[in-house]
Image (cartoon, rainbow over all chains, first blue to last red; front, side):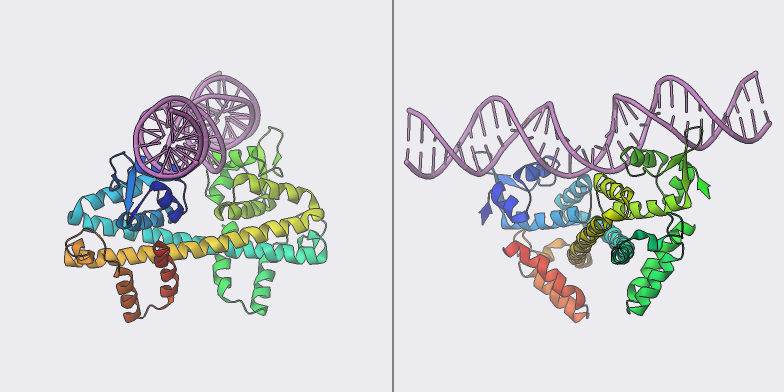
Length: 167
Length: 167
DNA sequence: AGTTGACCTGGAGTCCACTCCAGGTAGTAT
DNA sequence: ATACTACCTGGAGTGGACTCCAGGTCAACT
């Protein structure tokens, strides 16, 4: 099967311009042209582009993906390097996911803050009386709330975040 | 306790320039100045900035954070809106984490691809004999491998990704 | 023969989030 | 007194990833 740039764009959920930009940037050196100079994508090309989109998604910058693609062109000699690159990015991604999970926990704490404030019709329930400052023990109250509702799992992650400001 | 911009920058792990950029962008309207015109951050300011950094981390663009901060200045009247905003971003973040977990699963598949290729000293073990095209059944082989090594959890996520190219 | 519509190129423009000046002030250390 | 450092402003510059445009080719339809 052969596809035009428009078909591939649709399949991958990006614009035609984006694909041409990727080509310019050296991400698609394997794509052939027909007699009229138009790009013709094979099934295998699309398959390779899956991996490229995956790296994109993982936050790998375009020029690094380009080096990966370049390595691919060098054949078996570059297998080790490519494996190394993938491993590095896997660890980056894993770290990023953990980080986002902490961020999520903090966001949920803030959500609880507003849930309770909305219920009380005022934010002042969280303030030190007579000020606009948030009670220092509020994070602990939240943890108690989590414990009470049996959500122990997020507790550990959350304490990490809460401990930061004390540093 | 009061802090200078430099101290806060260090505490939050960003540069002084970045904090000034945030201020310019309307993220820090609550920060007061001393007689000499220098920014003076209170503990409470730093606490608020934690939330700002959290939203940053969650991928919320600066101007949206600015509207959140603006809402805060309007007091209790904006509680509902702020809660809504946080909830939206919580869902975005949750979706993003799921997406990254899928991406991770795909990356791990590729890692396995290279692990086995490196062990065989050639990538051709994964090709349709006589071509440079990856065997279509390779994803299934990987799933069998996952099952064999008892890693059933990632299997479901991974099939999602693998099914995409067939669309 | 003429009109679409999808494709092509080189290159300019945009958006975002910084990042880096130049030129100046204020407080401290020697 | 002078040197140093941390701070200030407005504004220019950067890098990344697109996004858009002018001007052109090609195949298909009417």
